Amino acid sequence: MEEIKVLIADDEKIECIALEKMIRELFPMVTVLPSAYDGMELIQAVEEQNPDIAIVDIHMPGLNGLEALEILRMKHYGLEIIIHTAYNEFDYLHKAMQLRAYEFLVKPVTQEVLVDIMYRTIEVVQERRKREKTNEQKQEIVSEEMKEVINNSIMMSLMLQKPDVHSYHIWQNICQTGSGGGNILCVQFDGAADIEKAEKKLLSEVDRHCIGLHYFYHGKLYLYLLNEKITEEPESHLWLNQWLPDVMKRLEESCDCEVTVGVSQMKDRFEAMGEAVQEADLALNDKKWRMIHYYGYEPKRTVNNIFRNMEKKLADKVLHEEEKSTAEYLMAQIRDHLRKTKRQDTEKISLRTGLQASQLFFQTSHILRMQLRKTGMKWTVQGQVRGMLALFGVDMENAEMENENTMFQCHQTISAKAFQTYLESELRQMKSDAHRPLVQSNKAVESAMRYIQNNYARDLSLEETAEHAGVTKFYLNRLLKQERNQTFIEILTDIRLYYALQYIEEGIATNQNISYLIGYSTVGYFQQVFKRKLGISPGEYRRILEEK
Image (tube, one colour):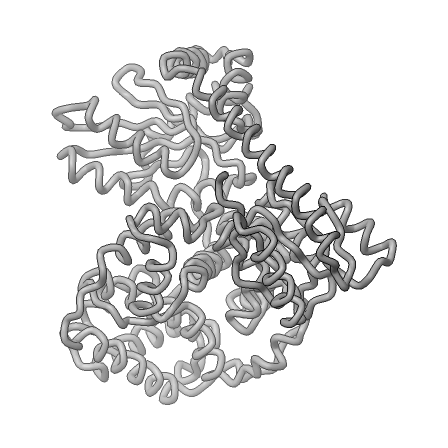
């Protein structure tokens, strides 16, 4: 019998210990995972351990059992839930039934009741696994040749401006996608000696990021890309800009060619994709930008970032110049910006500028870590943002208690002298980290970090990342803790929050849109993580950046 994993969540440790002991003695074939003691721990444990059965108490501190299960149900559909509680109020039971709880254990639990419920739940897990295996086998029946025929039929119909809806519905069933819209990309390879090799490399990279169809037509590769999380035009461009430029750069280096891409506007239904082909063609011919050309869209930024694209230059200065001269260089950039925007007082630094500097430091430390392949450079988004808020006098203990619409109290500006002193201190620490004796990072950690960076926007687990890195999940987590002083979940959260800050700066309007783009299934959970980690809410961060 395949391994079945059970997770217990209860704020009463003695209840957890008693249940763990009973299950281990009565069901030796079951693996009992370390218990969780509140709702947040339950979510983290399910994300990391992927249990088959969760025995969950309703009343736990912070996020209660039902609230946690409501979040988990968004992504972990197959998790079998047993409600374990001393309460039998109708409202709680009704809510639990809505969340598809399979059984109820009323405290105190007897051995006879536990055996009965566990056997029935294990049978449900085994039956589900059989169905999943059968479905996988059915999926494999559809041959690669058949997929290619459907791919060609759909894409040729779009080239001819006559979308083949019937073939598209077949393809939807094969790929189990509900979306009918998306973007068309028109890709041109200039100077490539082997077009077929370049095409295969690009398709391999695209498959890592989304579902797609492709067709080579009149010397250009057309890609039909779908990402069900993307619902608005600016989001689709931001999503593409996350990964497409790097893919194109690697392609140019490996195939010795110049790659240019035209991108259509995002369409919300398949029938409009023929029009998208024309737009991608026009965008490619327009060539307003160097590599990626968008049809009918000029990227807009709501915030003028003083330090935009300065991270590589700053990394070089950290390695080769004294921290005082580097801090003076940054201050000169700030004063020059203030003069250009006709600010009267160039000796006062705003909190907005401070938060932008915190992002710059995180980006720079990441570049140094990648260049030097060193361990021990433990700069985090959380540390940088909280450090900057503390510098400006934000009372984070009280700020965390405020709601989304309440302005917290802080000093909105500090003196240029105080800010420069802070910059010198941070740069001194960064320089010290960079010049320590070389201790190279473990290859498994490097592989895991690249995998997290490329896959943070979807449901990503420690188990999957460890498999990619070629080690066990326990060993990987230990390596990450040793080298980065963070667990897998902490690293994933830090990366997601970094992109959340970028999206806020780029003007993505709603927290819901951002939560989907960075891999959270619900906006409430995203807001809770953001505020708990950074000390302020997403709305408050947005207001600081937009403040005149």
